[in-house]
Length: 142
Image 1 (cartoon, helix red, strand yellow):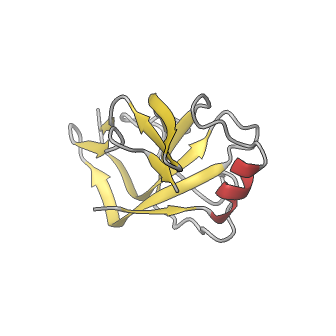
Image 2: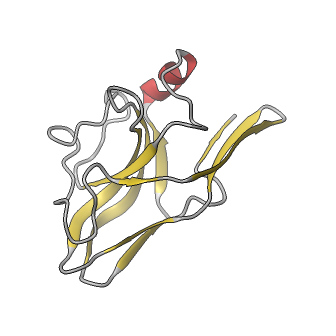
Image 3: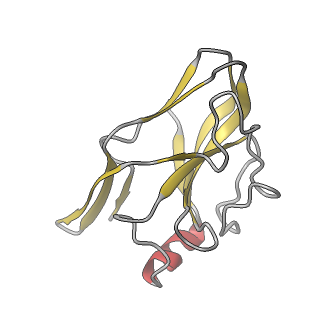
């Protein structure tokens, strides 16, 4: 099971209007370089978060989330997706990657939200899939 870590500046950006999680375009990007929760603020694929090559089933900038619901109940906010994000390697492999970064592609600076650490590097061979399980809850804030 991957471990989720929020970026420290995410809550500040949320409080100051940097995110509208229910309607902004959120994306999942792959990288094999460890993000730094304490200091990273924006998605920087050219420097801080180099992704696998945009080919063989991996999309430049990552794969978009499809938001199903954005709601609060009893002081807990939950953001859920309609479907899991499935990345399929085609015509070659994807990787290596260890981290899946969630960022806000609608914000002018691609503000970071959080990331999942899968514990070791993953490489997908042709035809293999990688699923980001986000249907029940992509993000919960209490």
